[in-house]
Image (cartoon, rainbow, N blue to C red; front, top):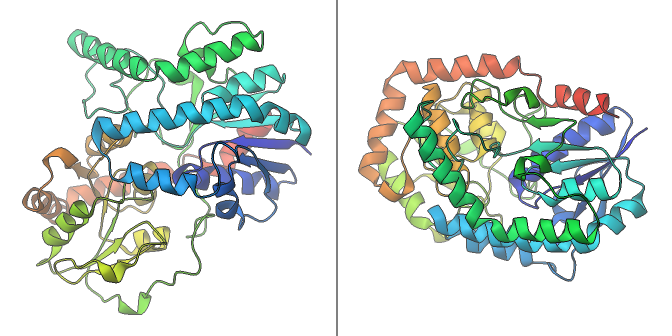
Length: 420
């Protein structure tokens, strides 16, 4: 039996795939402990057998994470990215202060580290533990031919595009210099050798992501990255959900279903929901909108066309019944929809969502409407094209077949156990 430790952000989009990997490892007879701040404990409580070790209670007291999510949900584009980076810096400093002692006390054998938890690799090195880098969102590995993850730049492996990409990477490295400096200073304090570059902080044993390779841009260094498809459970349920919130399935009709969700982070901008509702108001279809916030009262929101509006929806179950998914281009929603062969219209808001939406459009399985140019009219045009042109569903079904052969969470567990 191996005892695995998990370090990842407390966002549901990161916790759900990590918990699916944890459940697979638990079913194979291993032990798994997730290290998280107080707000995380209640979210992962439903994962049977998963142990929880609380850290960061002073820096992130109960309620802090939910408050930060709501603040981030009001932001878009570069503002949202900068806010996320500031948050990651705070998490990095907290992990430096508390995680090594907590991990050592629990007797962890192997660490599973979310790619955005950059200090995780250094903690593993300090404790002489093997670790795996897990990309639960879009891989952020930098290389010349791949546009930065926070842009909508298309892939072109030519000189001017490489120069553009490098400038974008330089901007990202500048914006994240405080996080990087915190890592550099801490490694010095721990008497660890300096990292040669930012890529060196990822696992040299195993890096995995929940994309099929056909979804990502071509990468020169892809041999180190294992593309496994979504880390999702076979059943149409997520480890982290809100079972007390019942969905009115009896209100669904036989009309084509359009499911709209802005996830659990970028969900505070009512004008985006209004644009979605207006764009769908006179379609011969039924619109379901998930507000992505279990504390929100959907009856307080009046939207055009009388859609079904709920605080939080059974994500996978609704995607499986949908003719179209409208999304902020969160990784789990996009890959979940493609896994079901459902085309999408993406409205990327911030962080890695522009990069995900650009890749989606490149597959031909959906369209992208950048949030800065979002209007109900423009969104309606994209909806009409995706619903009216069978090629979008054909491409979504092509991606579905690819996903089914990718290995997913079982292959992830195989690879993780192979390094133990």
